[in-house]
Image (cartoon, rainbow, N blue to C red; front, side, top):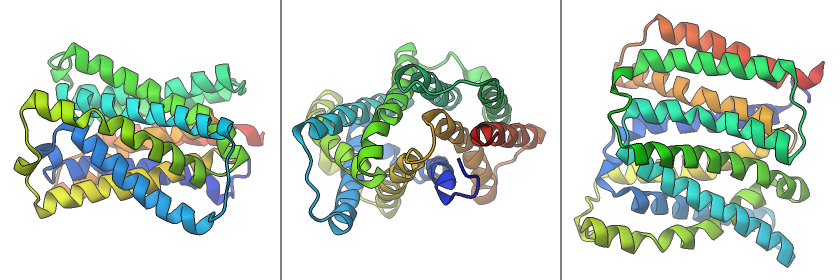
Length: 298
């Protein structure tokens, strides 16, 4: 891996955009039921990606096997989004933030098992430092005493979501190498839309919520646009773009930047305080990312 390659920064940009979702949540998109919000996010992201891919690759054809691969990834997208949004709705903020740390760990393990990627002491040390750094940041950002107050079912759903995104990352790599990050992200997202869409009427019926009662305010629309265009279309493409050159385990470590960015933006835009834990955690995280991202250059 070349440390000068701009591709190495693509997964970091994805993590930054995901970190921005913490601010978006303050805009009031909790007014939308979780599965319905997941559907709107993925549908808007799919439409955005499809518009771009039609311009960049106007005449690409895929085999039935390739479409099966895209569909398999689409299932993981649907599983991840539904379990993440419902799980987040059922748990506390601290529980959700801590369980998110499992995503890069699952990705590293799946990369070794499924893709036969190398697991070096440098990778393990870097991942360990990133975990510790993220833990320090979260300890300063959230009230960890609230852990255990959320739903156990919600916690289990978030664990499934973490494993699901790791699976989406690792199983997407062969198709990314065969075609491109843009095409793989696009068609897997497009195929996930009807899978999530099937659950929306069920959610609305069970929760006794009518679409007409969802407020269409500027903050809600802005939140959905951010989720669909930036944290889905742009971020998922950037995440997959990193896999064009990097191992899944290397890409995974950038995921830890998400809560750090969220805390930094909260301090910058919402006036929230950050303490010494944020600084210490950020330093450990940076060292961990450096160790993992430069492991293959030795």
